[in-house]
Length: 252
Figure 1: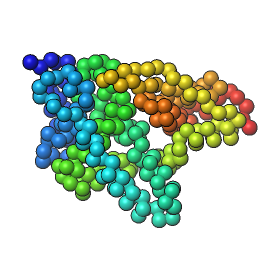
Figure 2: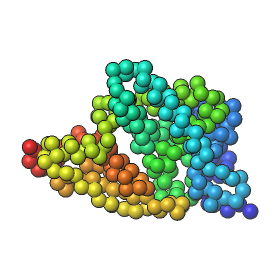
Figure 3: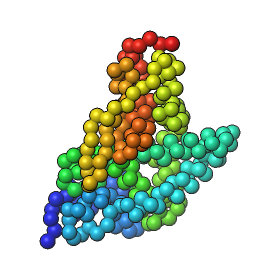
Figure 4: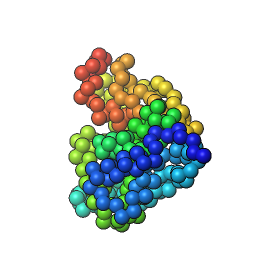
């Protein structure tokens, strides 16, 4: 017998997925693909029937599809830029934080099926899980309606974040960019500090804050040191207007 320790009963979860697809203007041929795309692996530990697979295999598809679409668009739209510049911009577009922000803006957090424990810990709002879910949705869309539909979704929801990335120079390696900024303006390197550790589905994630002169600039949350520092630095760069005037140290 099934142990009900998940966020939604099955009927409500499927209703949420249907509402998400309506909001995204997706008319599915095989709705089961999109339902699967919204199943986090923590569910498999809590339910003994009805859920035999998570969205991880669908995530596998997104990389090739997303990279091809973004690469083609950048190639045609920026003929003056070099290969390495285009590569950096593409990396910023497909980076986890950017995908997570897109997924959040599209209300994915209301849909993701997680275990009750993960839901109470608000892991349906976790950037890593949000990014993985939109990746799985892209994989589902590719399988369900093939390349043109997946391409249209990526251009509409992912590529349109490009102006913000260019304006805030988020295509530059975030940690290096933040360090160059603080050293140039204040002559100081920012510091990174682990603020909390949280467990979900037997995986540890770290919440880290980056600070300058005792002022918190931003926070990151990920499962590896490299990614959490990049995440925190990118968050700080995006919030520069909020903290710059608070820095007490002397400018160079």
